[in-house]
Length: 177
Image (tube, rainbow, N blue to C red; front, side, top):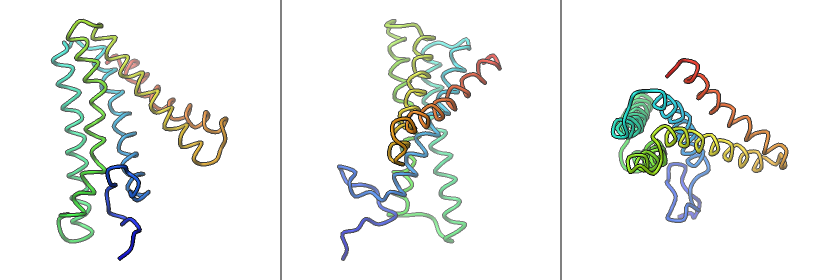
């Protein structure tokens, strides 16, 4: 018996025993979901939607992303391995894909605040987009620092990642939705 983590394992309660490849896959899903959610909330901010419609769109987008990822993972797994993922393999898929659901949390909270008249719906949606762009910047900075690029390299990596989020928002603005 070995104490080393398995490549297909999810982390323990403190996350310390997770395989780096699993964590990288999970972060990839989080970044993908963040970029997608930027497009959704910016598009909603230009539409004729109320808070209920906006929250429904955000939640169904997250659910749709998650289900699409699970279907794709299961299809790939059964094609390559000739059987459905079960047990440990399925738990890994669920763990890795869960950020696709959590990407709706921030926008949903902001939209709920708009429904309670704490802020306007447009402000809530644009704030959600802004927070998502900032999170891309921070993930880029963290990646730059972990690669040993120093502060300047980390800021450059963060700006590059944030630029992707801003570009997605600008495309939605230019398209008028």
